[in-house]
Length: 151
Image 1 (tube, rainbow, N blue to C red):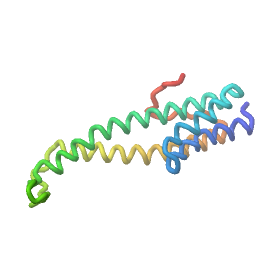
Image 2: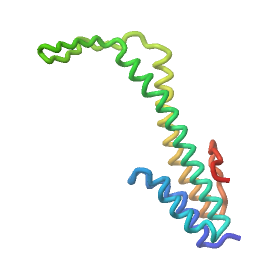
Image 3: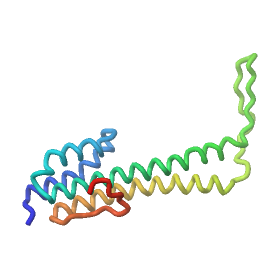
Image 4: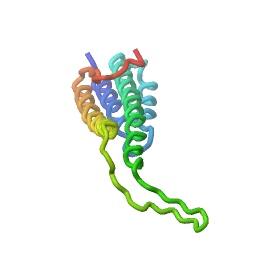
């Protein structure tokens, strides 16, 4: 039976990941601080802390991979047909015409990766709220697609 204090601490653990929208890297720092101070007091809090950190680290890996796919492909697709004239004598940098050229399948892959990144961040927000509600009810919640770094 989980106590009210354990439920509140576990809920706070999940919600502390939302600090990332105010404080960079807050979604790692605050859960680690809360989890490390309370993990020995309760198995319920320890389990929730591991789930939060596993999910946040998994989202980081997925986001980095999607950015590594999307950014170079989209930049290449945008600038591959842009004629750029550089005149070093007059120190002019002129883009004469900017055309989209042919829209390749690589550009579509870049757009899909960028959209997946966007949807992952929306899903992350919703899952954090859902997990916090579960924790406040005394239920343990395992995030989907979470890599088990901490067991």
